[in-house]
Amino acid sequence: MTPSPATAAVRVRRAELSDLDDLVALEQATFDSDQISRAQFRRHLDSDSARVLVASANRRRFLGTAMVFFRKGSRVARLYSIASLPEARGKGVGTALIEAAEAAARQRRCQSLRLEVRTDNRSAIRLYEQLGYDRVGPVKQGFYEDGADAFVYEKALA
Image 1 (tube, rainbow, N blue to C red):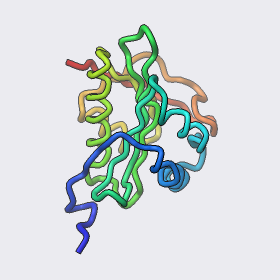
Image 2 (cartoon, helix red, strand yellow):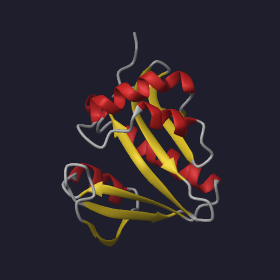
Image 3 (cartoon, rainbow, N blue to C red):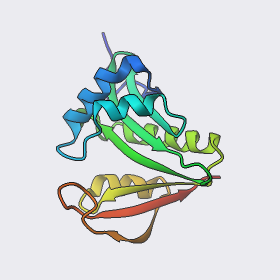
Image 4 (cartoon, rainbow, N blue to C red):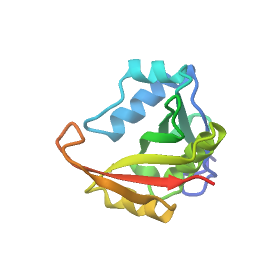
């Protein structure tokens, strides 16, 4: 019997080229707009300036994904995107992905991790705040494709 997402340990690993179809499918199942395209995923899988992560309870079943960007000369990493399947929410997938993103940023000697989040995404905001992220800077007006505003959050990495 395969464990359900609620009972299985969430594992996070770096995405591979063979994950491309699953990454695109998860992106399409999760977001109505601001989707990362197949070409963008493909480019970032091999990029030194990005890390694509996948979370799963078993090797074949993706529960979530995250993408972290690193800018040359900057000590601030950016959590560009994080997604989890609706049925996996509230089961530790987001936390596991964020912790893996933080670890990747620390590996790159980044001092902080920054992200944007929709101002109406209360569950994500609650998660970021529970994990030690602080709201910084002004609201980014019309940040998303559909015109929604974004808060900026940042966490110092020890």
